[in-house]
Image (tube, rainbow, N blue to C red; front, side, top):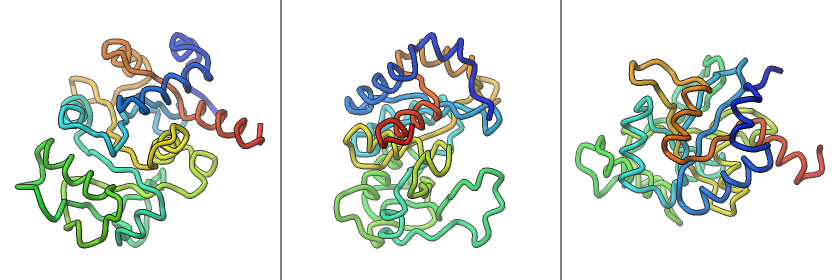
Length: 219
């Protein structure tokens, strides 16, 4: 399997340093940038913890990313919220597990503003959240993570949920794909430039895989 350029990633430290910085960042309620393998999507996602998400962070996701803001949930929470798959037969190349889209049942207007999307996300991840707390369709797109995390699927969805869990946070996170000013997808060099300009940690899905394998005695 091909992996991301070691020279660019190494400028952010070795894999352990990158992981430690990423975990510290999400614990502090800040963002991280995660790139996947070059032979996969070859994209970088800006990721924030869902429970501490701010309007300013959501505005950054909308401004600098694709605009398709996704809420990564465990399989258990997605089921508890009554979120069925978006389609009955998933033919997506990467098997990205979109559920039906959501909107908060209360506290939003059109649902599309940064503040409204944060309200929707907070409604979905609140302790004791129920299906009736949400409406459908909406402007936030939940993603259902595989139970085995990055060890089962090396995707941004699983990377997000695993990062939050490893940081000791509730396993819910928000992501959006970083884009260039011309609307094209940002690749590793552009993702690295954005990380430096905004003082954000950068790591690879492969780093999370290695961390978990070592932690769980699989290395």
